[in-house]
Length: 453
Ligand SMILES: Cc1cc2nc3c(=O)[nH]c(=O)nc-3n(C[C@H](O)[C@H](O)[C@H](O)COP(=O)(O)OP(=O)(O)OC[C@H]3O[C@@H](n4cnc5c(N)ncnc54)[C@H](O)[C@@H]3O)c2cc1C
Image (cartoon, rainbow, N blue to C red; front, side, top):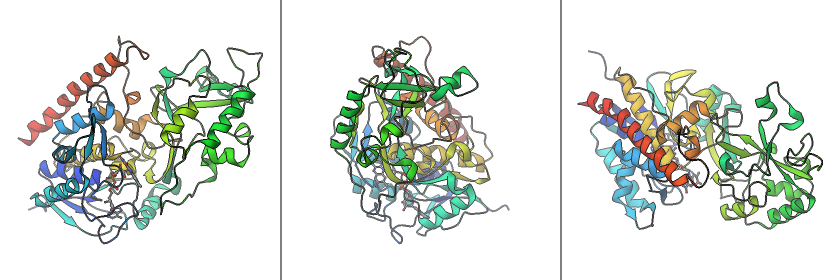
């Protein structure tokens, strides 16, 4: 008789716990390998599975108007453990889903350890497994030995230890009466390349005010154990400004090679450039603007940039300790490592950001691994769903060269035909996105539910 194949999951955090639950419920025997409490991290405090390391919020629970709320909805529809336990330990928090963290993690641990198909081995995995079926879900604080083993396989340039996130804006909220599209020195073979960047001009007075605001803004300190190990190429903008008032004007804000299309005779004193962030062209990141400014301060300071006065952000900037791989270049659409398809990745290490997104990628990886072990084919996750939008972003939609971690947001969704653009149509548009997502997600789940019967 053939030996029953096990699925091994490294890391029992948000992603690993959800992956284990999904695969075990599909009938697969699962072993979770969790290094805590034997080996700790600077952020975890307990030996529980599913520990929340910082805030106790799963963010908005609005599944009609908010992309993370929609992700909640999709995970609930798929019988997600993390959402189920979050609901059981919900705290009053208006429209947000806040969670009583200790009972939450205790009940995630209890559910997993009581499951007949799941066992937990409290050990640190330090090498990449050669055989068997594995999911690596070791998160932003992956232990050093395993990170080194991953880097040896992927190449060091494909594994990051910090994220240096430049703020990302929704293209449709930029004022194009002020901004214009042009690459520096019109470089590129095609018109698309020659007009790849979005440019926001500044006069001398605007630049000086901007520098003053940067220097005065509230900033976040690095946490203990995080250490400010900035790489040279990704200094926070406020640190650049501290080094000299002209540093930014000779760095990311240099005006050379650019002509203001709205006022060609007037040379801008400085230019803020934004670069396309996804294949759909709905998101643009502000080039070189990684920052440790607090979120409130970022909104105030970035609204001083001409053209971005009323821009909306898909995510604000930041710099954190965060181990993540260059998923767009390393993973296939089944979240498998191309060079070693017996290994999947899930959670924050794939370049998604946040408890909910990490658990969501665990949910998918668990289902994909289970289907593979059982010889079932699983149709691609519809890109119109929050799950599908996120997984297709990390495994292909995002630019590999500038890949940085991403929260779920409506900018990742394929646009809808016949729905009004701009701010005015936003409420109806988001409702149309979420209606479409829910229907497509249900359609994706049904055949799997039938296969399990
Ligand atoms: C300081 C800090 C603050 C954060 N604050 C927030 C926040 O407020 N809100 C938010 O949504 N997100 C926050 N995040 C991001 C958060 O970590 C993720 O959202 C989420 O926990 C990621 O889930 P995960 O399953 O990928 O990783 P984790 O939940 O971290 O789980 C990974 C697990 O793998 C284990 N592990 C690591 N290496 C090994 C190994 N070699 N062998 C065996 N086990 C191993 C770890 O012990 C851990 O239990 C924060 C992250 C950090 C570092």
